[in-house]
Length: 114
Length: 112
Image (tube, rainbow over all chains, first blue to last red; front, top):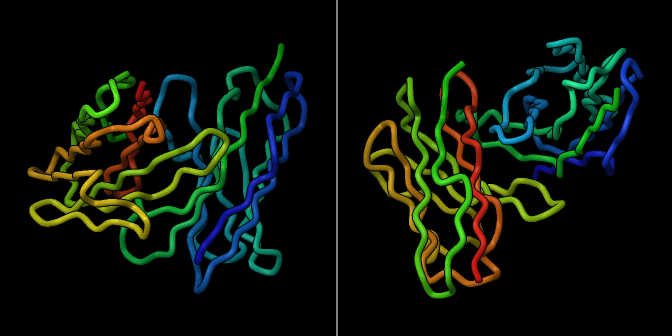
């Protein structure tokens, strides 16, 4: 079956540091890939997505590129802020029709200190 | 963006009792909602697909008689954990299917 593997956490960075969170996937067919973010006390929110190979999703300074050859969708940001502290989930959808039927990675907690 | 409200955000109950969790789409209609469960340091695992007006579809290994799902309207799905036991303690989260997946805030269930 489909699966998503995220790097182990937690991650603690200083403000303005560079961020990379690794995500790799296993899927049959051509999945869509997502990054979700969960801020303290809130629900998951879509951060960015990519629906086909070589697509780059971007939002709020974060980027991730759909790499079919390495089955990866790593999340990057050049300069993190304290407000980026949250839990980040990588996920995929098998494009069976429903947007919400997702396979998630374990999530990784990011803490950014001033 | 669209809002999905999940209630309660946390609940503590005694073993053997039942607990109902509500998931509401506040500003859109959702014919399909999903229920996930997350154990500490684990992924969110899909439990079931809730379809308005019809029976829920459960993932393999999920007991349908223990986790009752009702999707009686286009804006409300409920998950009832029946005869709860400590091993049911977990974080439950719903999502509603719209232009994208919209998630509730989650419910922390503790069974004592």
